[in-house]
Image (cartoon, rainbow, N blue to C red; front, side):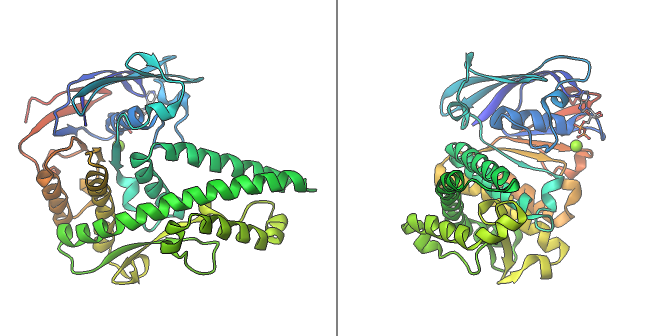
Length: 377
Ligand SMILES: Nc1ncnc2c1ncn2[C@@H]1O[C@H](COP(=O)(O)OP(=O)(O)O)[C@@H](O)[C@H]1O
Ligand SMILES: [Mg+2]
């Protein structure tokens, strides 16, 4: 899968971008504030139909002085060409696939699979659980576009349930309707996440040892914070009903607490991933170097997992990460990237010499919202 043409108009500070990316490595160099992350954001948007920046309103995505932004990419995948176009105005986004307006996002998802890694991801193990849920949810979404709809169903019923609980007296009949939906979609989310982890874990363990030559066993455990013990994963994946049962029971047991608090206190929206090395919590005992290696291994393993289990190479966006990594980790990252048989990569940096690549690449300069081939390299 690769992008062989990219065109942007009035996307944030990128007024006019016309690039023909290299099928392998694209290095974008520029000082701070020039538009590097904006470019990464535009490419991400072309795949996910939304930004990875949490406060990106449609208004903010369009250049301050304009009413409309345009993002266009030609995508090459399995011998087919596809054209994606996204038009953004303050009132919404319109998506076109091969010039046809897309009504149902599920038809569109999967056109462009993207893995993004930026400075904010480096703190993912130290930060709040939401960052770790986002990691697992994006990874699942790449392989199963339907997961976006499933998550939406869950978020909707959760929001409905919460607004009901917020204003007592609670209509018991309505609550029981929501409970059924909550259990159904919540179990689906759990099942997807557990299934992902089961297949992801061995890849992760291998990547950590191979790429970072560390003799420690890296693992990721699912932490259902609303359950007293662990979920029996074997059982959950063999009998999907088991998860529905767990959720239904937990809802019952928490009925009193949630009435007191006025919101739903159990469910996958509260869950977390626990990172361990040789069984020890990474947060508590790993060095900063090991923590960063772990995070990097999570991203590399995400790519390897998609390649091995689903046989496609996602496009990788690396936004300014080399400056966050020490020399050794940076070398390990690039040796993984060079050894990969295929896969298009977009890399932004403030310093070209952080990027340890010298062939199979195109270089660009990002300056004041313009992107031009870099003549100096
Ligand atoms: N809607 C917008 N219209 C015009 N400029 C914008 C808009 N949104 C952000 N910017 C500008 O984009 C620049 C930041 O770009 P960014 O890609 O984050 O920089 P960097 O190269 O450091 O990654 C800032 O100067 C910001 O003011
Ligand atoms: Mg940036």
